[in-house]
Image (tube, rainbow, N blue to C red; front, side):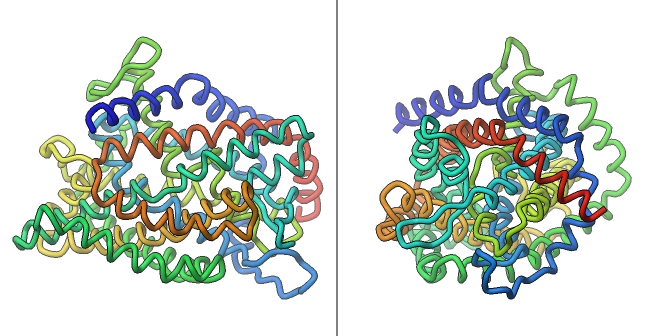
Length: 455
């Protein structure tokens, strides 16, 4: 097991090397400059689109703009925002959050392009059902010589969409917050029992298909974001005098990383910190990775730029709001310096210290909903990847593999789970970003027409 841990760690570090960093951040910056940051000026318009529900039967798609965004957010708002931020701070200190912000801002533009492409180049599966996502905009938008990228993306997605990280951290949260303090934890059975409960809940929803997944996400995600927001605001109000200090520390530590204790990159700690922040930011908001376009590609619309604008809201909510809230909760309570915990346990300590008696239980409620909603969305992504590879009629077999992986996630180590998913996330990003950069001029043309129309 130790050798497997080391191998997976080497694989993840190799996948997240300089080429991918250049592609995600360099490619995202290029797209932002190419479109002159135009979409970022239409955030209010993007929010107004969430109220639209198309009833025209001639318009292709299955779900509304709000449902597509909720499904995408269900997969990104979860352990990446709670455990992932804690991991970033424990390794990189406060400065890691700055680079997560940079990843989020650039990611908004990237998501605008991938969301638009998911509608512009939709295809049909072997059941005649319309589908979207990177594999389809590669197949429908690029010449045949690029089609191998669609296969590569789908193969990587079979592993990248597995829920092992979310399950692992939710299991850890239940164990540390409920079972161990009440002396209910049993080393041989507790993790397995948690895994079986999660497996049962997930199977009830995911075996019902996309519409059940999207409707469940639409109800759960906005409500729990609000609960989480109010909980963290309570922590911030209690420690309001520390907020200016920690905001300044986030910025100064981003360039002088005195608290960084991870692996260096490009010969220095600053490079290591930037890579850590970008990596955790991408894991949180998945901009450029390619999973969210699969949800946005199912939206009931014939206007690609609308869906691009809706997609752009993902990193805004996910990274710039929810991740920042988690970071402030950890920093202002000083748990990042006083505790040796990592991952979700560090965030739980922050809530417990700031809101005694009920803080950790409130966090557990948020974690549970975020994690379980993530399980629903990622199963849909993996099913779409398998459907592209072997046909939609056999795609449902992925769900059984997916449900089995829930048990694996409950029983294995944190480091292995982070590195496994990180590595395959990185592999998914290569075909997504390459295709997006090639097809960017098509999006620019459509966006000019759309923005002129609404101005």
